[in-house]
Length: 187
Image (cartoon, rainbow, N blue to C red; front, side, top):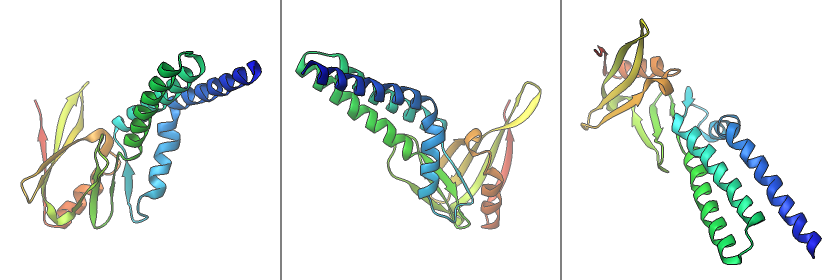
């Protein structure tokens, strides 16, 4: 019986080590390609927010910690109670990471914001205006964020860092649908 317990403990620890290491690279190397596989083929550009990388890494870390608890805690109630809480929190973190994305198609802009499970779709003709907020940093001018003004009065502000690859496509589509574009220099 003792050998079985030791083998079980080693399996838990082995998988925990794999998850700890995966927490460092899996959100970029595994989660992002999974998202890209399930997003529509019409997508011109796909991206995710930096929060997605954090929630995925933390989620995997919590799952690994749950395995360590299973391997090392002797008290049955404490062992399974703590491990269950860690597994639930870790699964939620990984889920938030997998559902955090945005993409552009010729017809619309789709956002599934950080820490949400539902996406918002915006047709290009729903945008009234897009503002590029420009800042000077280290003597260089760069786009800090994009602010979208919608027909219904909603305002969406997004960091330009995560939108950098698709900002020109977004601006061109908004202008082609009758919206305006403005660059605002912040002091």
